[in-house]
Figure 1 (cartoon, one colour):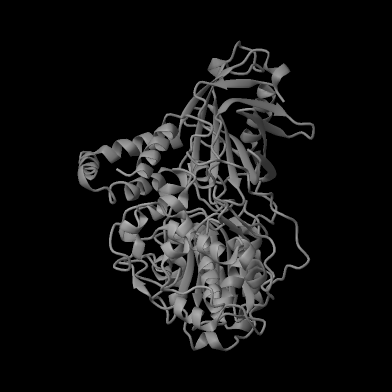
Figure 2: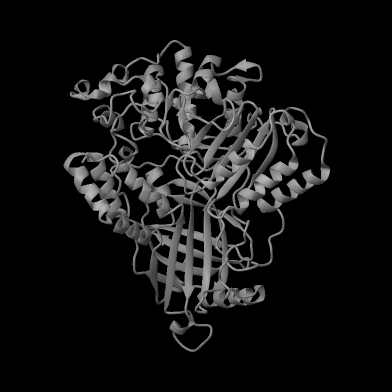
Length: 630
């Protein structure tokens, strides 16, 4: 078993064992700033009606509504651009229209653009060997490994075959050294194997050739000409831009990048990316062997839905779908449990676009004011810009309030009036109380965010409740030395706030509700969405009157039950583990891993992961907590 696999297994064991703090082998330092205010040099894509660009408002309305109704999908934002105009855009509450969002692997396509620029400047070639460029980072045995034949082309087409993959991002600080000295799964160029570290190495190559980081190199050549001002790209412990992940982008800026390639690399009459590079990048360079995405270009996926179609893709639903025959770009930001394009959201969009006729989509349609007004009304409702509903029709959460739908199967859910009574009663009972948790390894940060940003939780040790001066109510989460104050928004109201997670600022949106469970217990439900991320956190507090200290109705319970969940959750973790270990392991290690898996071992891992991601904790009332509560 490789060293990186051992480190990944160790970190998983730490997470399952609810160890907290810096459990990663990678040094942490805060990088991500808070989302900046509008920049005057930022440019916008012009807006127009769908009909003026040969698309029916009814088609967009149907697509937006269909996406909202997908049970297992969590769309955050969508934007449709045709003929250079935005013709449809909405966010799905509580996500807002104007905010950057983690792009995951979508930014690989931007790294590919930088490679094309560097080749056009005569500073790099596709056949140049990686070891020759990064000679200072290679180890003593690198030239004896199959990796010594890897070229820039192999990195771009995900055909390097290097064993050192994404797991290396949690295994240590020397990513380049470990990549260059790793073994191979196959001869370079002979097969396709998706590996984000190939993109990281391309970023390092650009820095080595130019003396600038990838971000510094692209700022005057790509971002500034397109008016892209508000973005952020994380760096590794080696101070190399990650290249294959770690970038935050606004959805309108994603659309600009799609339009740029539809226009053969031109922007407002200026050639930004070489036309020949755009053409080669969007053609099939290698077959992937995947049914749902069979072809790959230069850090771009090739779509076979329509002639010449291609797309930039990041996990969990970050997409820029480009359709040259329609002159159309469709961008999404989401938090779906999908890797690549297997999710229902992508299927819904691709099916809708396949139904469009090229002939009818080339000439303007008569304006349809009723249909356009219906589209605008739907977008206002989806984005939460209309007044919140006074209650929940049939239990659970409002159906279109935050994108990710809940199953509304609880017939016991109380009426709106009863829930308001519960809110008043329990906010009074809990005011000034604080509960110590029996297990203290769970944090407010979803696990998937901890791993990707190398920012690991300190573990919530206690939860406090209090009324606020404006008649509101909040929870105080005591995690490590930090106290996170989470304001609770009731009756469909979304309350926005920010948290500082080890020096990194994250925007959150909170929706809460006092209701009852099937046993008649009062429950304080809280959904915490990270506006910039593809993840959300649930913290539900179960309150049992029978555990109150006395018969006084104003007493707080001695015990509470805290159930937590995150989305995406275990449905993402276990397949990722299987991909990293079972499929890659060879020799004696591979034999025992496959034996473990064939005898139900992964089922055990799945149960353990579920217990970690969806824990049930017990809280005990702390005496004299009122004096200690924030």
